[in-house]
Length: 117
View 1 (spheres, rainbow, N blue to C red):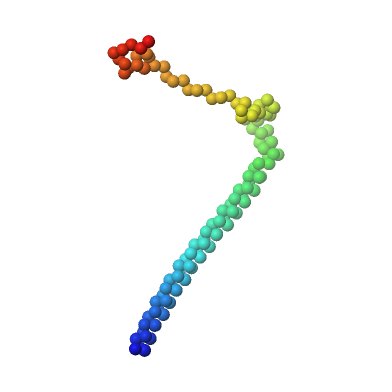
View 2: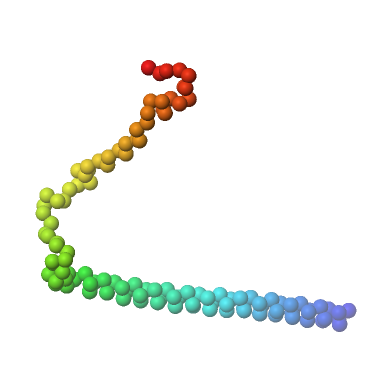
């Protein structure tokens, strides 16, 4: 009886150890995946920071003014006049698209035998 109990307990212990090892292995895989995602997030943040610095450099008013002067003949840019700025409700309404013209016979083709007045 004692020998059977010992064999049973050793088997349970080996099963528990195998299960614990499986959980540990899965946790290590998930930890590696989280670390990989963290590295990607850090790289993306650095890229965003670099692009923001680049945008700030490209958006400097002095640089833009120099570009306007260099390409003035090609771009033909003029200063904005105060009367060019309008509110959205001051914009003209879009035109309705006219329907294509139809002949009187075409409109009442289903009434072929009767005339409509």
